[in-house]
Image 1 (spheres, rainbow, N blue to C red):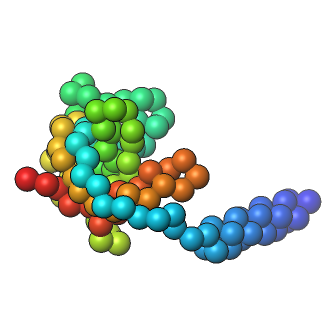
Image 2 (image 1 turned 90 degrees about the vertical axis):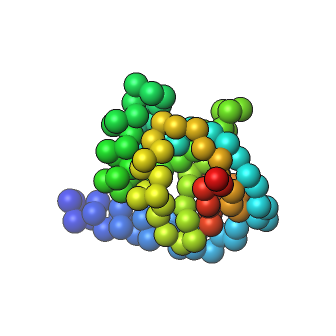
Length: 120
């Protein structure tokens, strides 16, 4: 029974991965947004953000956890560079407000800012 459940889980995961691979990106548009740099793990798990969470956010971002940006109007973007993480570049900005430009893509309710760059 255990092997059957493991096999069923593997088949389900493979089907989901195959479906995701067949999906096409929505139309992309370059945007410039200003907001707080977030450690996405703590933010999504328990809403952690702001100055009180800065040290933890920096540690989590440096360790490779996903990094994001929460804009002044409350929209949250997952940030990624040109097909590479931006964690090293963004860790020093944990819980700080910065401006970033990049190509925005939204799929299934997730906002991604790819090819992101910090705007001086």
